[in-house]
Length: 357
Image (cartoon, rainbow, N blue to C red):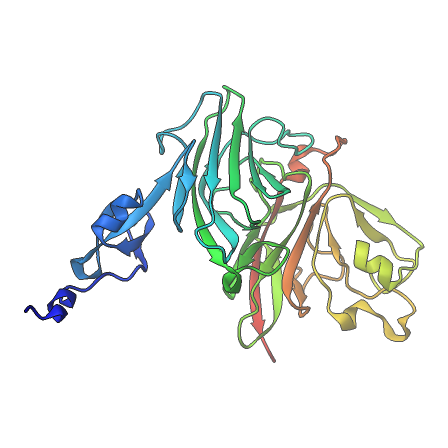
């Protein structure tokens, strides 16, 4: 009788992440048969040659039924220049899946309306349960986290124009509850320094209307505060800034709209479209609680910094120790106004976590 232990001589590859042979895409290490029956494609060996790096890709009319799947336009990397509608369905691989992380490796479809910021021609609409998220423009290198309901998630590309060349390549990862991004975080960053950009950020672009989300940064061990600076002198362009004067702002008003400096009669920034950076508590309330603090929650116009937020060398730098670290992006419905589109390009900031003193 044969010794059954001989059957275990050849190791079975563990299903772990691997890199394709051309180093372009990530895949899952598995045996050749499992890759084939799950409709993946082999992209080189893994597990000392006992497995293959299986990459999953789908396009219009397809389904995402495996973790770490790429969604591309037809004939990628060729451009699409014809009108089309394209749908992809994402099915949960396990009941425990709580979120999707979608990375836009390449994403270039039609721009929003230059005056309003509304995606009124080309559009990607993502639907999960009764929630929808719309996206257009150029978003290569961006990512989003999306809460998922019990049913499938649909990705619908609506591309009516013949005047625009388009391309997209996205990776979709399904996350269990313990790996999800914090509630409300559309984007989540887990390094001590990096870049934060509004969607469709381009020097000649236009930020998207109807946006209200958080850009979140995970607080790393030994770090107690965070500093934000513009990527360049022209990388903060968020609509017109209005001022209101001779007003005393209390805490409730400040939480919802932002504050000026500690003189209750000083001009205070008010913004239709804005980003909000939490203030340190001790900066927010003045001694005696008789007026607004020195920190302004709201940031808009053509400068991230207010009068009190430039450093000694005149550089724009906003620091806060308020946790959790996040920036709220709040852009309105996109009504037309006289503001030049160049002043609505959006925001690019660098962030750096600062060690505890």
